[in-house]
Length: 58
Image (tube, rainbow, N blue to C red; front, side, top):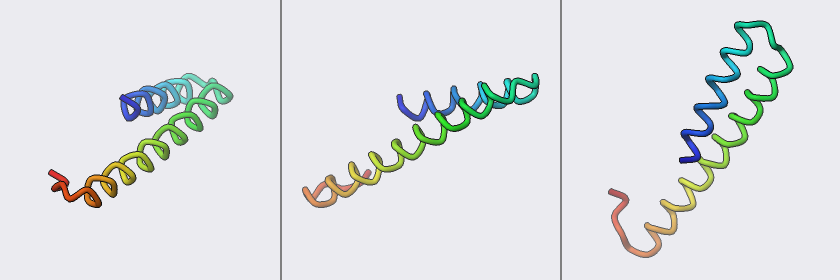
């Protein structure tokens, strides 16, 4: 879900950049970057917790 939001804001940033809306493109790119980093942190934490509990990652 969060990765989907990050991709949505990334696409919005690309479209806004092509159309010349620099402020909207910058804001959307920053939001996408933050959401992607949060997604990665939660993914790593989830994997570590799974490994520590003895479950296989797949």
